[in-house]
Structure formats: structure tokens, C-alpha cells
Image (tube, rainbow, N blue to C red; front, side, top):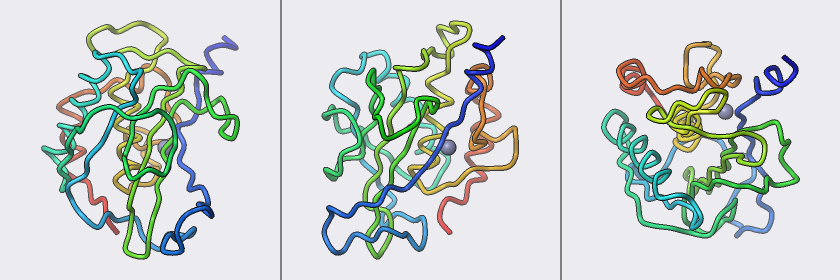
Length: 193
Ligand SMILES: [Zn+2]
């Protein structure tokens, strides 16, 4: 039981201060918009080819049903790095600056006109990941966890609605990505305020 409650953990979003960046980068964003609707992304070099398939699949859903058009451009070094490449990484070593209880984390960077970059990391040190096809019990679904983090990537904050994929507490089974339900939710998204 104790283990189960440990897994009822938080998907979070925090904006780090990016003091080392150019003066154009602000530390307190005034809005959560991208300047452009086409967003390129990368996947960390070590990620399994099958994970890449599922990641691309979820981005395709966002491309189909939100104002954004996502394009996969290849592999990149893992982690949160302000390198102008939006990167999705599976990390076996979670950063010490982020609580181990978080299974996903998205960092956005801004300039005066909006979001300029976002990196997503997924915590393989604390939890296991599965997919809708594999369905390994007790593990988090890549699709649902990633969809939540892509939500942050495009500028969304958490939802109070427990049924929303942007709700901040999710049990493993709640991260299952139900296509019909989730596509309908994506169609209703208003990502930029
Ligand atoms: Zn979150």
C-alpha cells in the first residue's frame, strides 16, 4: 500500500530562472504563448526506438487537433539544456534540483515575445513507463505522461478537473491515453492566453 501511495505523485511544472541567458530572456514570463505555431522537437540520443514511435504518435495528435504543428528533427543530448532545441528526454538519473517524486517535468524559456524553447524530462529513476500496447501494470503510460508535459510545452497550466490530462496528480492507470476522449479534449484547447 505504501508503495501505491508513493506512486500517486505529481506531474509538475516550474519555470527556472535562466540568469545565464542573454538579456532578452526574461525570468518572469508575462504570457504563455509561442511566437510561432510550428514547433520542432528532438528526442534524447539514448531513448529506445520504440519510445520514439510513441512520442511521435502523441505529437501527431497535438498537430492534428491543436493550433500547433510539430516536427520531429532527430536525436539530441539529454536533459534540460537551453540549446534552442526542444528536447524530450528519458532520464535514468533525475536532476538533484527536482524532487524525485515528480515523474515528468517541463521547463520553458521565454523572451519578451513568448516561449522560445521548452524541454521535457521523464523520470526513469523513480518509476517505470509502459505504453497503451504493452500495458504493464503499475507503470505510467508514456502517452499520457508525455501529453501532460506537451501541454506544458505549448503553454498550458494545470487543470482542476480530475479527468483532464492536465490534472497535476495522476496514478499510473490514470495516465492511459484514451484516443477518442483525449482527441476531443485537444480540440477544445486554447493554449495561448
Ligand atoms: Zn504538470
